[in-house]
Length: 243
Image (cartoon, rainbow, N blue to C red; front, side, top):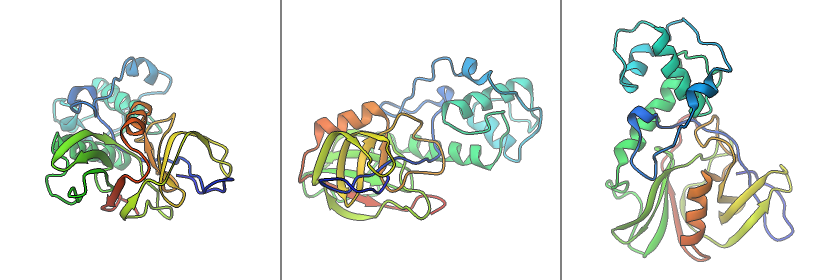
């Protein structure tokens, strides 16, 4: 989110955050991401021969032979993952940022079709949009029924954390534009001051995070727009890594 003034209501905007899913270990829909020609896109940068501190972990995550040695094929696979998830530099080095994203993806994948298994999001009020900052996930439930999701999100960075607690959607603006940061925020649904659900054009897995808003992929934000309305409950819990 980006905090800003608006003639009607404070707005918000996008920042960055890490996390994602590789084709070899693709998350079940709607977390699945179509990577397309990521390998071709990655060719714009060089591929390192250096072995990263998380080489073995990256190899295991990507389904590669786990030997702890950087090979050309290892580098290409790691670089494709980095390119797909907005990690820079995307040179195939298995460093802490890349491994942090992979670890987050593993948590997102483990959520499967039961993201509220721990019952941390209250679902006794009817329809509610849940936001788990720890796993960087959001979904919509109606009682015990999963209506949509879970989908990956990008919440506030350090110093601009997405505020936790029970909230309600109180203003929606389909074509919102931040007057402070001058960025488009399509499908904005505000639930706490200037903090809102909205789509972004970049990767929801890119670091370090938003300015407080819950950033979403376009199709996910569009679906939220169709399912939610003013007065619907939102519950935010957990803590994003690094905040």
